[in-house]
Structure formats: structure tokens, C-alpha cells
Image 1: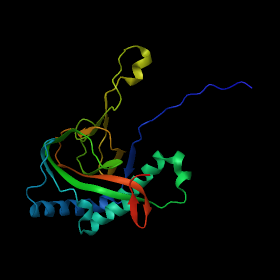
Image 2: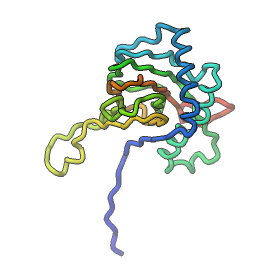
Image 3: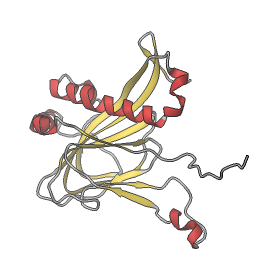
Image 4: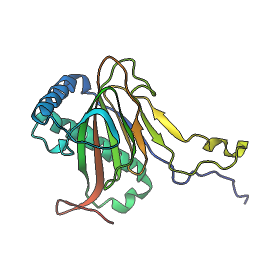
Length: 221
């Protein structure tokens, strides 16, 4: 019997794109909550990689606010879980008798002023990260308020056709209100300045998707 030639992609990088069907209904409620939060916490969190923005503390998911709790429970947590299932679909049979659960390790919102941005960085103590675009103007684009990701693999060392697929060093993602991007935590990423009429407002979160035992996540399996 003749054996068939084949191609395989090893260690691909998975991105998830999700759209919140409830976004238009809750958008103004989220923004109102963020404004109240800023009044009660005028300083915000300071970070060296950020410029011209307000960043909340990393406990947004623990706030006693019905809209915040619903958006995490009904959208963000579910999207993290679907992404983890897709990434691990070849291993699901090993965990068919296990209870799996999502733990949000950190969550925060950022309100960017005009021209504000976040420099390249990566997140730790999690497997997946997200950005949920709460507010942007219609003029938002990949280079105007978009999120970019840097390639985790070495740059090509030759410039022939064989290495042409490896020429890009970064990729820009198109931002859109109500859209959420999910990516592996090891990726370096940042945001382009936004110069539109409306301020750019986002929610970010980090998550672990774990086997649960007695209601608690097992962090290492």
C-alpha cells in the first residue's frame, strides 16, 4: 500500500473572537459604573507601560455590581471556556470525567484619553487573556485603537520564498464595540493610540481553566 504524503501544523497559536449579543443593552450601564468607580478611586493604578489612561485595580470581577457580574458570568467566562476547549480538543477525552471550571485571576477596565496607549507586555499566572471593547468610535481601525500582537517565534534569517510565510513580526487586530479577543498569555501585546471622538474603553481579564476538585481549581495536572 502506498503511503500518503501529508502536512501538519505543530504548535499553532489560537485566537478567539467573540461578540456579546447583549452589548448594546449594557454598554451605557458599564460606562456609568466605570465613571462612578473613577470618582471613588481617582488615582487609579499606575503602570510604567501605560500612557494617558485610567486603569482600575485588578479586582473588577469581584465588584458588587449586577451588570459587571452578569457580563463576566454570561459572556467572558463562557468565552474563555470555549477557547480552552478548542485549544485542547485533542485531549478532551482525558478529562471527560472531570469537572472543568474557569477562574478569573485578574480583571480590570481601562479608560484611554485621546492618544493613550499600552506598550508591549505579557501577562503571568494565567493561561488565557482577553480584551473586551466596551466603547470605540466608528473610525476605529487596526492602527487607530487596535490591539497588536508580537510574533513569539524567531524572525526569519533568510529572505527566500521558503521563509516568506515567516516575514511578519506582528499582527494588528481590528477593534469593534462588543467584540472580545482571547489569546494565550505568553504573547506580547499592546494597543495603538486612539484618536477618535469617543474615548476608548475596554475590559481586560486573565483566566485559568482548571480541573476542579472539591470546588477548588487544581493548578497543576
